[in-house]
Image (cartoon, rainbow, N blue to C red; front, side, top):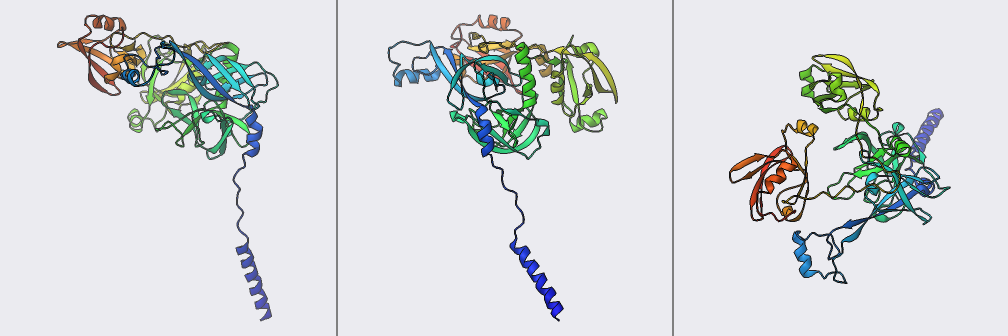
Length: 475
């Protein structure tokens, strides 16, 4: 009996002890040491750009803008009564020091067209910076300040980063220097529209205007990315932030530092994603690769014998799982390299050898600033237009057309937008297909200022007619 009581007592005490001792918990990470040590190498970047144009009320307005009349009647002009032709535009961004002698990484869009770049360190010292080079395709820029003995960041390996890991951003959102935000890696290798060369790291770290160009750290205090952009419907943070992997950025900066520009390989093909239905129709076991829609005449792909309908499965041994993988793999290849492309054609895989070409890039700037694009003149309708490239015509299956790049003056009140494609001009029952800028301007010259013209516009996948009454814009 005593033995049974003793056993019961031991079981009771064990149960009680287990109930009293809570299960071990994992504490949330502490970012204080990381912020204190690594924040010293993060800088604030402010830029100034001198804009030229009409500005009688302190805001950039053209006299044909509908708001010009409102400002003329209700807002007093600037003291002095003159009409200044120049005014300054300021913007903010972030960056981080990668070498003690003053080299700094940031985003290309942070320093684009800047007339003056000022870098402010955490110790309040300020320096004027010059642009060593910038690459718009990856949004990476390398700038330099004249200084020595500067604190630098440590670089990590984005390939070792796992989805779900904690990451930290340091930057200057809205100009608030050295602000620290944290979150997790949401995804890796993200492809974004119009961004074919960067496998973005997606995070839920709070990123806002001014964070651009700042570093993304792992918990070891190593930079794994450059915060570049956000997805937002409001213009502010909505939980979707994207960073350029640091290995991609460092390869870009190496080329910018050594030659002031970036060299990229090209094939000369128009591609699209392989859907499930398309894979089945082609006899592929699963959706993969990039199907060739068109081949540019005289391109490396054309010379090697690639054809529309080919599915590119591998490039130089690298498997192309999705169409976005191909531009990255080709771009990372040195122009002039002999490469083997595996394609799926007529139900079988075959290897094709070709010599990789080169994408023609804008030359980077070894000193000074990124050059501003020349101001294009608007035509009589107040439209800035350009001719479609042969690749674009093939992609859209159009014989001609003009791309609207800007809408100025009174034409801004019409239902026309940058990105629209002008297909034809209609007047007095006659329809004329638009094929070139010169031809379009000659057509417009036939009308007086009171005339009305109708344009056939392609917007996305649809077409629409837009009528413009009066030639109030342009020259």
